[in-house]
Length: 95
Image (cartoon, rainbow, N blue to C red; front, side, top):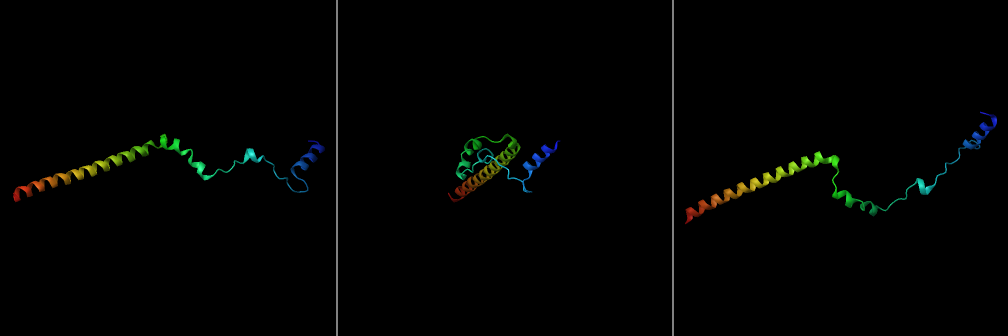
């Protein structure tokens, strides 16, 4: 490097011992803040489509939900059968 190019480099990097403030175009670099209500605009498409990375979780939750529904249905069915048997006995006794 020559002496002149060193002097130019020093002048560009430091002026009087202070580094110049970096300039940037505010329209290109910094995105404009969006109002919070605009964040909800993209949810419609995301809610209708489930993320394929989470399918094992959805399968597990579906199996648990079906198991709970079958358990509740079986319990209600047993209660109904017991009620019908008891009501039949009571009808037979009191007639």
